[in-house]
Image 1 (tube, rainbow, N blue to C red):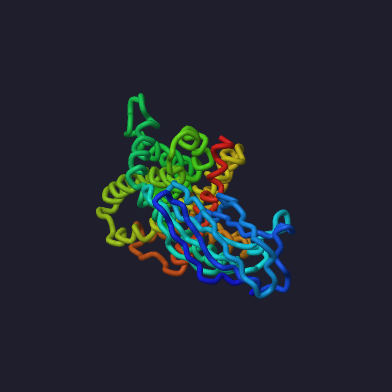
Image 2 (cartoon, helix red, strand yellow):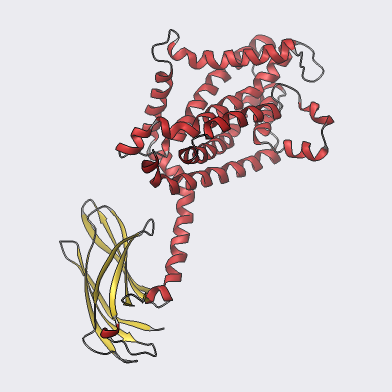
Length: 411
């Protein structure tokens, strides 16, 4: 211990001014002298982000403070009027040399908060910089797990309005209107069916019929439609909505989520069409389709995490949209959607092992299982995909949240 804080008293008046009174005892081996720049001051931080807001006034001792002696300190601190939580660090310092709390000395920590224009003191204690860093790291870790889900839930109404606006606005003025939400995926699936099922005569298993190929192919397209729509548009979503980012108080982290939800809307209509096709060709929809929500959950986590990551990166790399377009095309063709996975047999075993860990392949295989093979999803690959999806979801949001402050300057 290099300093001790004796009998600290902290009060707050109606004008949001903190008054701190305490005795500061010199437990170091040096004499504290005002003419050598020694003083006591304060730093005011935003408790949520750790950002320094105020480098406050200094108070110099009336005379020398030799080792073992104490000096009375009185400081007045204005608490910001903006809503939030704040931390005030009161510490010895030497002008143009250092703040002693940064050197590991203890400091007096006052925690305050402002809510709806009213300030309050939450706590007063002695702490160290290492203690504060650990506490902030734990809070950041907890916030990383909670904030993405809380943001989506808090802004669920905004997301619903924005998705509706996006879908209707995409086809405004066209003859088909919102029906293009159904027509577009249908035409895309018919195109791939014609190329691979009719022209190239690709087949799944021992059934050579075109209807069997269509069922297996279209089952694989269901997760791909939702994923590719969100991932393909994510790099440019911030550019498309730059007015929201620059001029309005707007939850910009919901913009990539809007793409994920819009993709799910597309998949929803595609699933309805597919179930109709199943009834027409096989007479019924299997009960194992009830497993579909279990597959959609890791799919949404994985897609949202990737969308957050690409949306933030797209602000800095304007060519990312073109790069992702190429990568999605490559991703589609290395995933056995329009051909059976048995065609991997001619590839090296190491390459097959890598391709088998493709998250979209896991979803495609599971979709085909529940729709066509009356089988529940394999638990092993599914829980691994769920863990991967959750990690990417949390990391993607943290990446976006960290970079979002720089968006207005770059857009």
